[in-house]
Structures are given as C-alpha cells and as structure tokens.
Amino acid sequence: EYWTFKRGLTTKIHLASASAKFALAFQLSPWNNHDAPEGRVLIGSIVSHDNHPLLMDRAYEDEATRKAALDSGFIPVVPPKKTAKLLGSTIKNYTSAEMKLRDIFAV
Image (cartoon, rainbow, N blue to C red; front, side, top):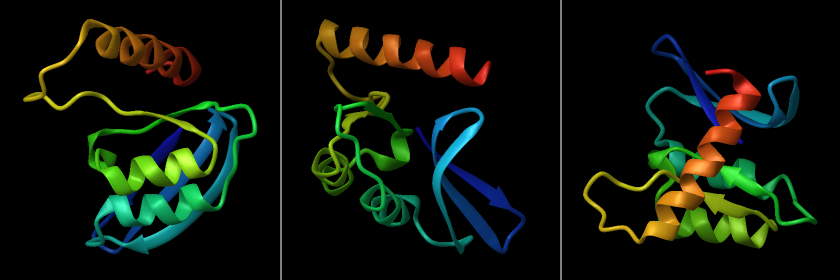
C-alpha cells in the first residue's frame, strides 16, 4: 500500500507499507508537490517478486505511475474514477482489494 500524509503546510510523508505495522519505505516532499511523481520515486525503491497488489488512491491514476508499479513487479490497484465507465470485473477486483485494505488498517 502507498499512503501520503500531510503535515501542516510544509511537508508530506509518502509511505509504502506491507501492513499497518510494517513500513517498506518512506520519503518527504514539499507540501505543494503533486503526489504522483513522488509516488513513482517511492515505488521505484521497492520490488515485488510475487506480483503483490499495490493499493493506491485516485491521485495515482495515470499511466506513468501504473508503469512504475508494473516495472517494480506490482499489480496496480486504483479506485475507478467517478466518471469512468467500468466493466464488472474491474469493480469486483477493486472491491476485493479495498476490503483487504480495510481489514489491514481497520478503517
């Protein structure tokens, strides 16, 4: 999973984690930097040898970020845009990944 936490108007913490208790990598960026480029840098610093799903939010819905995730061995899972026309399987895949995320982080 990949998360961004904002700390006031000065810093964002970008975090990749395997679970609620295990961080894989993190980095800091200025508060006004867009999340997707920072996320691509962070994703490039970790690797999945087993094609684990990488759960991300809509801020990362672009081809460059999807490619970075695939290049690092992950399967990118991003919630569909509200305006997107979806196939049933896409919705099902996202819903099961979202449920896994909710179980891990108890959100």
